Amino acid sequence: MDVWLASQSPRRLALLSPLFPNLEQSGLAHVDETPPSGTVEHQVLTICQRKAKAVPDDGRLVIVADTMLSDPDDHSLSLGKPRDKVHAATMLHRIIGRHHQVWTATGVRWGGQWRFWCESAIVSIPDLDDDILAELLDSESWVGKAGAYDLHGAMGQYASLVEGEEATVLGLAGQAWAHLEALASLQ
Image (cartoon, rainbow, N blue to C red):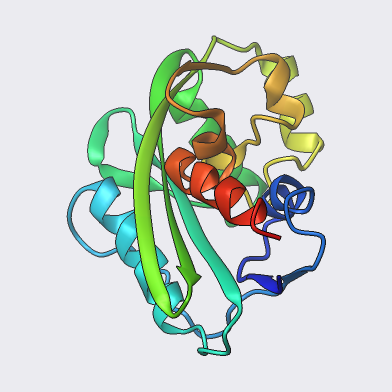
C-alpha cells in the first residue's frame, strides 16, 4: 500500500513508519494555516481540511493533520508553533504550572473518500524553575511543535497526560490512529 503523509512532522513520521513501510513524507506548499475565528476545535479542523483540499487525488492513502493547544486563559485562542525561541518561551510560560488542552485534527483519504477526526487531550505541566525552562529552550525541542513542546521530547520528563489519547498529543487524532491501524492490517 502506497501511503503519503502530507506533513513535515518528524513525530508523525515516527508514529506511522512502523505501520506503513512504504510511507512517503512531504509537506504541502501554499496551504493557508491562518486560524479562522471560532473555537480551537474549529480552527484545527479547518486547517486540516484546507490541507486535504491541497492534496492531489493520485489513488494513494493520504494522511493530513494539524495540532494546536488551547490557551489556558482563553479557550478561543490557539497556541500553534512558535516562531522563535522568545515566542517558545512565551508559550511555555502560559502553560507551565497548569493543565491545557491539546487539539489534533486528522484527515485520511482512502478509496477516494476523506474521513476527518478532531479530538482533544488534557496535559499537565508542573511549575518548572528557570533553569529547567532554559534547558528546554536551549534543547530546541520546541522547534516545529505546537505549544512549544514535544511530549516524547525533552518536556516528556515533566509533562503528563491527564485525559485523552497520547496519539492526540503527538499529532494524530486517537480515532484516526485506530483507523490507520486497521488499514495497515490490510497490507
